[in-house]
Image (cartoon, rainbow, N blue to C red; front, side, top):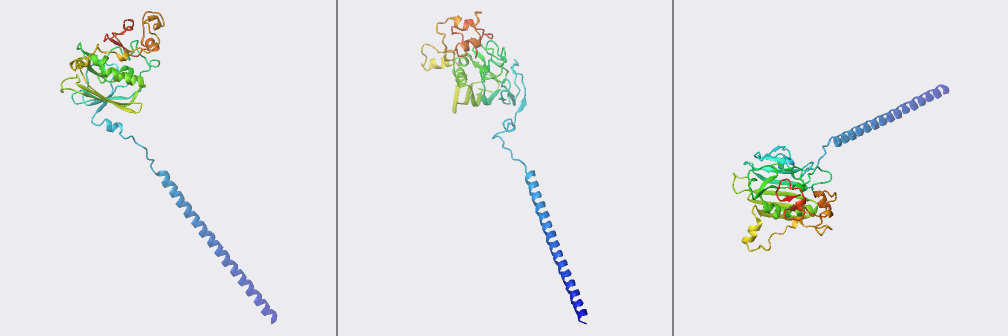
Length: 313
């Protein structure tokens, strides 16, 4: 009898131990499963967050005024830099910068050239650009109506020496004295001496809607951090000065002054190859500033192909 009771107690103990073990295993299994589920959910959420970040659009900085805004209301066209036609299309914008330069010219509804802008004026590069012996990209300029006058030049808004082309979108009939010795020449010389300019803008106005001869120019540009504003009428400055009683012994040509070492007017000091002719490069190498005008002693030795009384403007 005692043995039966002992075996019964032993059997019940084994059953109880086995049952507890299964419960613990089940509990551990559930904990492990829950842990895996949590990990899976967290991983999924992390992946979603990473995907969201990757899909976010990259915000790019845009210029203050895009080309689209600048050209609004104008048709962008291309015109060859040496096109001699004096015709202009109305309400168009044209790149008048030589090579990779970007100088933008705008016309109004009457085909008048009214505005020219450039973020940066880059000087002509005599050593790496195809420049003629007279210091030009092209042998002649566009025949804008009015330039046939004896007192008007084919005036560049942005000169050859400053990287401008010679088509009608960069040419206006300009008083010869103003262009060669007056404010126009003075402005161009200042930009050359400074090595270029930034934030350039030219505003050209006319007396009426039927002419292509401007009455007034306004140039705004920045030289070495300083903003310059030049305003002048399209007239002979000598005549204006004379009427104001400001004329002395005549105009001085500051733009053709000599700064080099040749001081005795000896052509051999400038004519390095001894051929009796002086090129733009030779004159610059000798220290002369451009342009060389008709009243300069070097002029007879240089090639003024367009016979406008000035070489290297």
